[in-house]
Amino acid sequence: MQAPAARSKGLPFVSVVIPAYNEENYLLSCLESIGKQDYAGEYEVIVVDNASTDNTAKIALDWGAKVVYESKRSPACARQKGAEVATGEIIAFIDADTQAPACWLSTIVSRFIREPATVVISGPYAYCDAGRIAKIASYAGSFINIIVDQLFRKAFNKGGAIWGCNFAVRRSALLEVGGFDTSIKFYGEEYELSLRLKRAGKGGIIPRLFVLTSARRLKRMGVVNQYWNWIVDYFSVLFWYTPISEKLEDWPTKAWQTVVASFSWQRVKASLMYVALFFVLLWLHIGPVIEAVGRAIYVFDIGVLSTLVAYHGINPRSMFYGKVCSNGNRNHLRIALTFDDGPNEPYTSQVLSILEQYKIKATFFIIGQNARRYPEICRRIVTAGNVIGNHSYHHRKSLCLRRGKAVARDIELARQAIYECTGFEPKLFRPPHGFRTPWLMRTVRHLGYTVVTWDNMTGDWKADKSGEEIVRTIVQRAKPGSVIVLHDGRDSRPSYDRSQMLQALPQIIGTLKQRGFDFVTIPELLESEGELSA
Picture: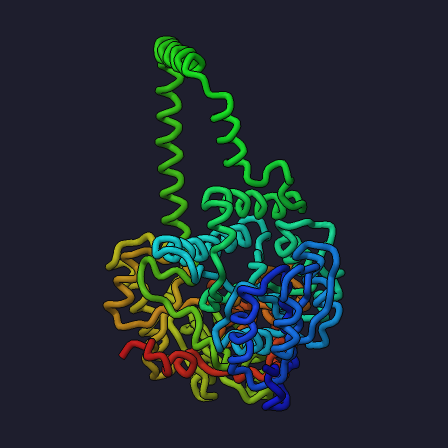
């Protein structure tokens, strides 16, 4: 069987690399799944014969794959050999005992095209030949792995783990970082590579990009050993940049074997006696310490709970306290530009002139006090076809902590100010500083507003933030459907200097337009998803 020929021009050429050692029982199923891909571009299939002693190479040749030989036995060496002979712009790696869905290549290429800054992506796996419980556990385990990885990305600026049986990388980025570390014998070569690839660009995980793989290693090693090796290896590479030591591989089994070999009832009885004596002495002599520890645990629990409450109140994408619109459809190259804390002269007028120059519209979240200060600018915003949203009257950080009636009064004052200036009834609301509480969200919902937050903001309001830094941050974070926040004012301060933002704005618009983005207002961004209040 031959690999598919080119069916559409303009799409990147892809190299599919399959490392294989004695895989005669699994390889054909893997190759057939690659042959059924719905990708409209051209791709090649490279099987790396990693010193096999069975019919692995013959099966690959008969199918029509390109076969190369690697004598040094290890996944890192096999993948590196495949990468060296690959000619595609994108190199997709899959294991020989793994089967890919028909949309595998097209999904991978689509992500790379949509996000030019992304250099490596990966997807989870599930077992295809295990029992029902093992299959469910593999699905659940994959999502737990994704959550843990995302946590370490946010907390330590680390993460970016990739699954060796299911990942793809830009060939240029792989060459830039020097390829795989071939000194790694078995575990960890993909994690180690992901850390180095961070120098070349972003990494991403596509949760829906599942592949089916064999559970033979799980059956041979056991669940405990398999997950022990994975967890220890992950953290070892993440923090110390070195894979798991061979001494630690399969440690649970080794430890159990040691216990069984040295088992003695006499030793057990003596150990239990000493343990009991220890706890008796502990109870008699350090009761006050235990009480103090209990109080510390109580304080810790309160701290954790308070942190979680605050997190959901300040995270612009959290919907724990109520629905917010932080982005639009990720499949369309549309992006919304929003401005907070205006009007603020002469800077808001200059923002409007730049928007008119580029023939785009934006959404302005206006503070009621500022609207009364500059009514003619509010009218100009609406006359130019832009959209106005309510950003409260006083722009107080403490608004989210006030009672519902006080919240409603502040929002209503801002609505009246906007209406008197423009004759326009705003339907969008952005909380001051993005801070939210359950009662604020309930009040806003009863008033008929749609709460709009963001997924792309930098501290452009800060005096020490340069225009170049504003441009770099906004452009790097831009995605399809993004809501960008800039500030044409700051709180209700009159004539607050926005020179850096004005310097950055044309470069942001120009760069994103070159990438193919269309600038739209918030209602235009969200109307197709039915997210706007009636």
